[in-house]
Structure formats: C-alpha cells, structure tokens
Image 1 (cartoon, helix red, strand yellow):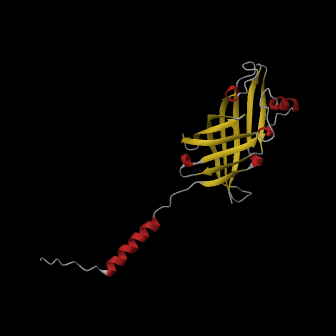
Image 2 (cartoon, rainbow, N blue to C red; image 1 turned 30 degrees about the horizontal axis):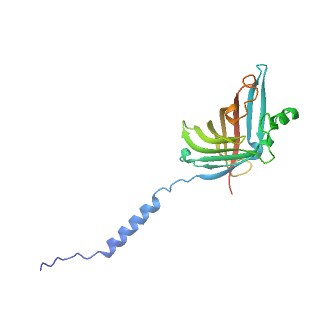
Length: 203
C-alpha cells in the first residue's frame, strides 16, 4: 500500500480566503429592481380627438384615474404599467355628447364598465423613449395597442419631497376595432390619443 501525505490546511489562509470571498460578495453591485409608483390622479390625463365631418376636431378627456407603474430605472424594458377607470368618467364639455356616447349607439355603458390598459412588452428606443405594447380593453373588447412613450422627468418632487416621475405617450386607435364605429367614415374612425401622467413612488 502506498501512503499519500495530505497537506494540512493552513487555518490562517482558510480564514483569509473566506474573508476575501465575503468581501467580494458584499462589494458586488446589487441587482436593480422595479419600484412601485402610483399615478398622481390630479396631474394625469388622457385626451382623445377625432375629425367631425371634416368641419372640426372634437376633443374629450379622462382624468382622475388610478394606475401603477413598476418602474425599473436601470432596465426600463423590465418596467410595466396598468391603468383603469370607468367609462362614465369621460369628459366631453357638452352633456348631450356625453349622453350620446353612453347610449347604445356607442358604449351603452353601465355605471361599472371599465377601460383598462395592461402593458405586455416595452421596447426601449432611446435615452428617454420607448414603445409600450399593451392590452387595451374598451367597450368590453380587448385589442393590442402600442404607445409611443417619453420619460419627461424623474427625480425628487420639490414640494412633495419624494421620488416622482412624469411620462407622455401617444397612439391612434380605430373606433371600429372596439365596436364603436357608428357614423364612420364621416366621423373619423381614427381616434388620436394623447397621454400625460405623473406618478409618485409608493410608500
């Protein structure tokens, strides 16, 4: 039988190796994670417009709605957004138009009927721009839409003293895709949408 001598471990070197490993792990940068931001309802609006018979552009708006953004500043593509609000919070500036929109000609909207948007993918296109793809549910129909989004500003709010972010976005949808195509093409099927929102970091 051949006897092989096994070298004894140096306890000093063992402790040094363990210390070096733990120090390296502590010094490694932590993986960034998405942080929850909630919409500032008082400074978030969705404005829509459409051509009326070629004579004018008619406008409407939604405001005061709820939503949240899981915002990953280090990796914006890993962020997400969800927004929801009742159809009947639509603002038209004229009661007769509102009632017509809520009638069976268009929404036939119940008090609790909701508009929702849930992002499904984000493609970063520049330092402050991205394309946000998501599912829009309108008039109980769900379609995929793409928002051209811009990060306006991110930082501490000078009056609220907490992290804040502002975003803008635009898109165009077809009324007929959501079974709302009454009077098209005389009243334009295309509806232009402009979005401007502020969001605060959740407590």
